[in-house]
Image (cartoon, rainbow, N blue to C red; front, side, top):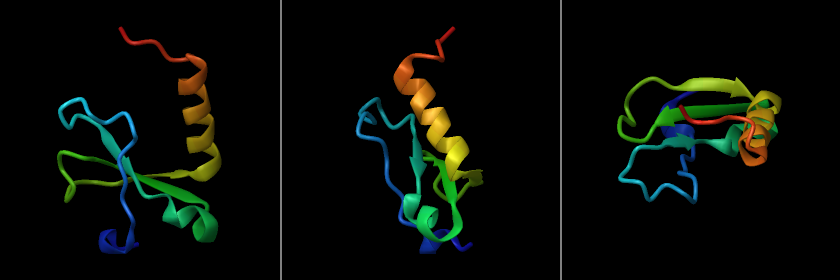
Length: 69
């Protein structure tokens, strides 16, 4: 998976000074994967998650399952 073949996008709530992640959801239909990277370091490492796990994570965030310290 070449990073330049991915369509990266930031969340709609990313107006916090650039401290956010980007996801490339264009691999979900063909590979069932969601690559994630730090928006401040686009050439840095990419973590790839199964789409089902990432979807559960997002649902947990929306439900308030995770709390900041």
